Amino acid sequence: MKLADNKATLSFSNGSPSVELPVYQGNIGPDVIDIRKLYGQTGMFTYDPGFLSTASCQSAITYIDGDKGELLYRGYPIEQLATQCDFLETCHLLLYGDLPNADKKAAFSQRVTMHTMVNEQMQFFLRGFRRDAHPMAVLTGLVGALSAFYHDSTDINNPEHREIAAIRLIAKMPTLVAMAYKYGVGQPYMYPRNDLSYAGNFLRMMFGTPCEDYKVNPVLERAMDRIFILHADHEQNASTSTVRLCGSSGTNPFAAIAAGVACLWGPAHGGANEACLNMLEDIQANGGVAKVGEFMNQVKDKNSGVRLMGFGHRVYKNHDPRAKLMQETCKEVLAELGLENDPLFKLAMSLEKIALEDDYFVQRKLYPNVDFYSGIVQRALGIPVNLFTGIFALARTVGWIAQLNEMISDPEYKIGRPRQLFTGSPRRDVPPLAKR
Ligand code: ACO
Image (cartoon, rainbow, N blue to C red):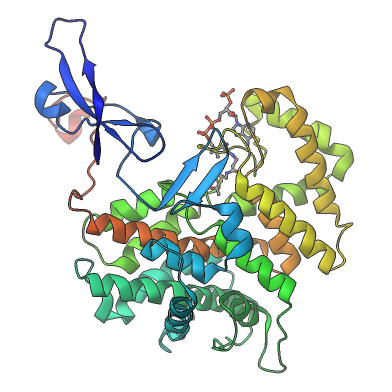
């Protein structure tokens, strides 16, 4: 960390002595005020629910400029990565800090490919779930269970264990997601195929059957790959912070990633793509485009509790750059499948148009996020709505593990332990049962 020339001074109106706080500069983005010694010097904590103003760590992986609508992985703009690289190159970049050359790319792909199968026993574990279980419930269990199957990579303090756990997680997530899907629809699991790309192999494990060859459609393969790239990392969001906090206790990497999967499930985070598609289907069922105005009035009415899913973002107060790339992919996939007149896509376009012009959204800087389009693409690919967040978890696994490994390698890392402002009862005595 680089000290800035200036310092911050915190003064108090009650005459307590003021405190000087160091300021650090990042390479880009806001400076941070170092408050680590604040409690020792003043006996006070800071209060910041939702971490609106708090940098919880230093990180060199992903940078977002929410006002510009910019997303960089290790300095590279998401637009360039999405159009010039594939997902495994992006994984290499996130994990090791740079894009691989051709030899390194081949070696990394080979390494990941060699780990795509899961322990055969995993399928018996999976069979314990109800067939109608939500895939995210299944995935949380399956990912957590990996720590019971791969004992040789569970020591978070051993760099070799961390490295192999990272490769295993990236390699096995598509297999697990596809297994969760196949189990739900009652079809046999498909073993991975080493001659296919990461995305192509996933599509085949999802939609192939042992009865006939599955031919990977290159347009759909590229779309799947792009979904993975766009969701690969997003700095200190809720699930990544969960993975870091969970891993900060020294737990094994599989357990920490399972915590990330659980956090991602929520509709304000990874579950938004599922919620967005459900919303589009609801509007469609209740009258479609003709009812958009009515729906928008509900969204703008604070008492209705209705939000326009796929709109708004904690960090982006301008266009989400991923949304534009996903919109392009959406058009390509619908054209390839002859679904240009898909009513849900038309409905989404009409909602987007109104929202981008409406004062309510303009004033609050609410723009479509990546989930607004990714649900439509995934639905066109044949992925069931309740698996959308599972696909997101698959893609985000590399970001989680890269961030976890970065944290563990940071000499300043400590177990995460936030403080609180206590508003409950002061000390009191337990009254006898008869007097309560
Ligand atoms: N629809 C309608 N109003 C909205 C929406 C929305 N989607 N999002 C925010 N607002 C309004 C809020 O009501 C609030 O209005 P107010 O200032 O009059 O009270 C204002 O905009 C600010 O919203 P907050 O909830 O305070 O913003 P925050 O940064 O905490 O929330 C969030 C961001 C959770 C993403 C929110 O925009 C939301 O719920 N969006 C819908 C869910 C969604 O699409 N999530 C995906 C996130 S992206 C991802 O995880 C990949």
